[in-house]
Amino acid sequence: MSIIFISILMLLTCTSSIIWAEDWGSCASELDSLRRAASYASDAAQSAESAKNEYEDKKEEVEDKKNDLRSCLDFPDIYDLYGDRCESQRREYNDAVDDYNSAKSDYQSALSILESELSTVGSKIRWVESSCGVDFSPSVSKSDQLNQDFDKSNGGAL
Image (tube, rainbow, N blue to C red; front, side, top):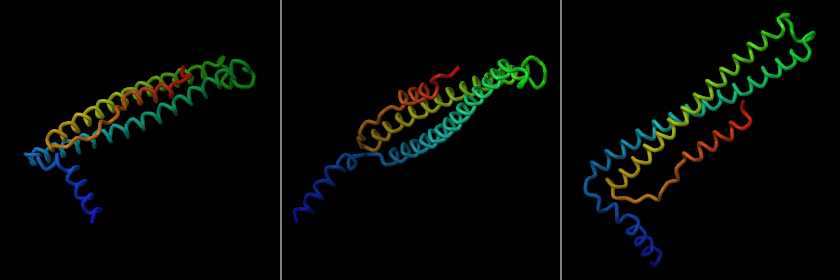
């Protein structure tokens, strides 16, 4: 019997703020808006993941091309296959650096877009709290974590 009483008491305590929400239509509208914002944020997270993978691939490619160029310069008799004083390898290296810089910029842009979308989700959550009469525990901002992850993955880059 006491378990039932405690359960009912907990249920009333947890839902008391929801019971007093006045405009369920507004609540539903804000929840739909949150769903859309979460969908956009999810798309942005997937784009950021894709940009990160491209960035890491280009970073590896730069290292490979740098090693090829270094080998050609150190041992031209073996590695200067075109007899052009390693200009072909130098051009490939420079192209790889350009691709790397482009991928790095794309990744930074993707992180910025994701941060903006996550901020929008946070705002929508606050609107849902207000419209639906609930109080969620505060969520932790991911922007600092996103920047730290980017800085970590950028360690030792050119």
